[in-house]
Image (cartoon, rainbow over all chains, first blue to last red; front, side, top):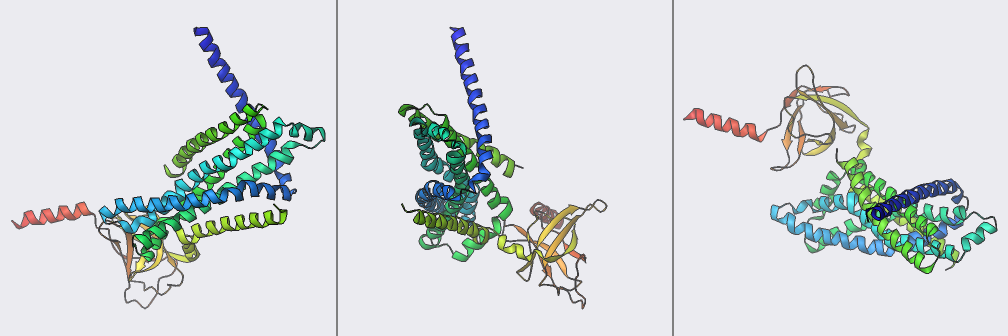
Length: 260
Length: 153
């Protein structure tokens, strides 16, 4: 009984270590292929389209609505203290520091990460990747690296669009619906939101999330069991692991950036 | 889809992302103010700066003329040495201008208010504001009030 529990634990640990190691070797292989993606520019453009442009709609709509809801909820709390003029600050700081990178990252993992895993997993299970190797085309450079670069470029841009539209949404609710003075809304926001401490830290977060989410997505696809069930499981794992990674890293990054 | 359309859409996506970043920089945060960095610095010593922080505004007659760029403790006098960065367009501030620390609103953030003196000479880079007035600390005010009240009886 105890022996089998221990054995199970040991197998789980070894498996985890093995996957972690493989994942990092895989990342190293991707990074070696990164400079070449800028020479094969059309491939990168195509991936930017399927990773970035196709995620734009969900990011834009959620950004707008998250901003509007934040404004409504924030207003009902702030108005009790007569501090509804700070609504812009509240919305801008929460979007730029936290919600922009995190929610955009989660949506990106669901929309683009899962699609990447499924695509690469299917390529593997239909032996397209082995086919490429047979033709002396390196799938790491031809398939994986452009997708990785596209993800790393897309997420910061998507997070910025998310935050900007969220603030516009908050302005619409705050000014047009709730009647907060537009000048005060913007000037308070500008006074309290710092470019380097708030906005740049948010951008750094979104770059980190972009790297991690795309890395997980392409690795899970490349590493999946090449059956229809295996691809399905890999896709689920991408979304779950990406969500864990984003939330965990967000805590660490927040503690590093704003904790001191 | 046609590869030309894809390229156009990717171009639009990148432009939208850049526009969003630009909006975050100029409209949401205070990067627009950074252009005034090319100002000159003067120092002022205060007995107590209260809640003054680096980047707090410096204003004159309610107009913002600069920002606090550095706060340090003077090791000899145990006073606060505050460095003010004043925008170079306001280069006609008299030498005997006084600096006071005020609070915006009842519990708002603290800022430095300058009151122009009558000197014919103007402040230059590295100059010092000699006349200063410390921040009002609420507890001290209450303490003084209670003390004077007790004395009066």
